[in-house]
Every structure is written in C-alpha cells, then in structure tokens.
Length: 259
Ligand code: COA
Image (tube, rainbow, N blue to C red; front, side):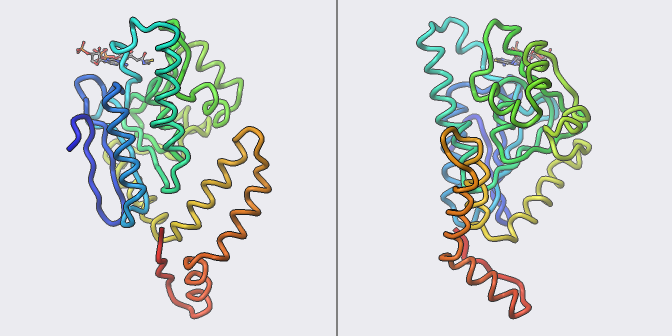
C-alpha cells in the first residue's frame, strides 16, 4: 500500500518505519504524504493505543528533507514546502491525540530531528546522531525546528546547534533532555514497545486530553492553565473516567472503552 514506509500493528501499538535506507530515509514529498496517511489511519484506528515512529536500517532515523527535491526552489516554493510539511506531518503529529514515540535509530538530521521533536517524546540508540544542519546548506530549519528545539533544550543550546550545524551524540541529547533514554540498537525497539505497552494500559481518552492540555501551553494566545481546566472537566463526562474510578473503587483493573 505504501512505497516509502512500512506499518505494523501489534498489541495496540502501530509501528511506522520510514523505509528509504538507500537515501538514509530522507523525507521526500511522497514519504511525507504517506506518513500523513499512516499517522491519520493509526489515529482513527480504535485498536491503536500508541504509535512508534522509527527508521529502517541501522544507519539513519531520517537524514533530513530530501535535498534533491528543493535545490532549485524559488522563495514561494520554499515557503510552500515548509507550510505544507508542517501542516501535513509535523504539526499534525504533535497534535495527534494518539501518543507518538520516536525511536531514533541513527542519524536524525534536519527534517528527521524535526519529525522526532514533533513526536510526544523520544528515545535513542547509542549510535544516534542528532542535528539541524540546514544553515550549512544556506537555509534554516523549516519544519518547526527553530521552535521545538528551543522548547526542548533551551534557547542557547538550540541556537548553538542551529548555528554550528553540528551533530550531538545520543548521550549529549540525553543530557540536553532531547531524548528520554539511550540504549543499544538491539534494545531500542523493545524499550519503545515496553514504554508503549505501559501507556496503552491507561485511558486513551485521558491521554488525548493530556496531550491537548500540554500542547496548549505552547500555542500563542492560549492560556494553558485554562485549557487544562477545560480538559480536566471534560474527562468527568467520559466513559473512561467512569470505568477508571469504578475499577479503582472495586479494586480491579480498569478496562477502558477507549477512543
Ligand atoms: N536528502 C537527499 N539525499 C540524502 C540525504 C538528504 N537529506 N541524506 C542522505 N542522502 C543520500 C545521499 O545523497 C546518498 O545517496 P547516493 O548514494 O544516491 O549518492 C545516500 O543518501 C547515502 O548518503 P551518504 O552521504 O553517501 O552517506 P554518508 O554516510 O557518507 O553520510 C550523512 C551520512 C548523514 C552525514 C550525509 O548523508 C548528510 O550529510 N546528509 C544530509 C544531511 C542534511 O543536511 N540534512 C538536512 C537537510 S535540510
């Protein structure tokens, strides 16, 4: 069904694997579209509780946007590239109500790091290398990198990474808070699945509300605390809340109706 990505679904976890290893999984237009479709499908699928995004092969998560596609772009086409990409993939992923975990298995550069940063959190293999090398090409990050990197690591570290165009290794990314855990390549997907299973046991509806509340704090003109009050209140009208509280009082495990 897809040309550039693979998807699998097991135990409530949909794994999306970007699969252009010969091009280090670089994001061309078609891959971005396929990723949009795959994320949308998984989000709508009632059996999917968590989405893991990773790259095929051992070398790269994603080595960036596909440079060959935009090398001759005009100002207008450049703006459109960023706007379309943000809408279809990066903002789309960040605002999904299904949790998205990025398992960074190698190079996560440019659009690759931006995709990982759009996920709700990240883990990395000890071979991973991360960076925003765009200024070395005469351009800047256009898929949210200038916004999400400072949010995650702080302005000074983000600007150092952006201005030097350099790469940091997984351990440094962990010290920066850019990734939550660093493990060996072999342990990466098992850890992602372990974390995903832990998430999948909880209320999908409440998790979706928590994502919206956390994201609200990063949106211009929106009061995150007010958004939290609204989301908190809404939970009281959900079947998941009834089930969660009833199960606790009955000293049994909750079986959430879900999204
Ligand atoms: N866009 C398009 N093609 C890319 C790519 C990208 N972002 N990143 C890698 N590739 C392609 C290479 O052109 C090469 O293709 P070819 O074999 O047909 O020539 C293939 O992937 C393998 O990459 P290569 O550069 O030979 O691997 P390497 O091990 O020598 O270097 C990197 C790895 C990641 C350091 C290097 O590929 C690189 O710097 N990539 C671009 C990173 C970047 O600037 N990303 C931001 C884009 S805005």
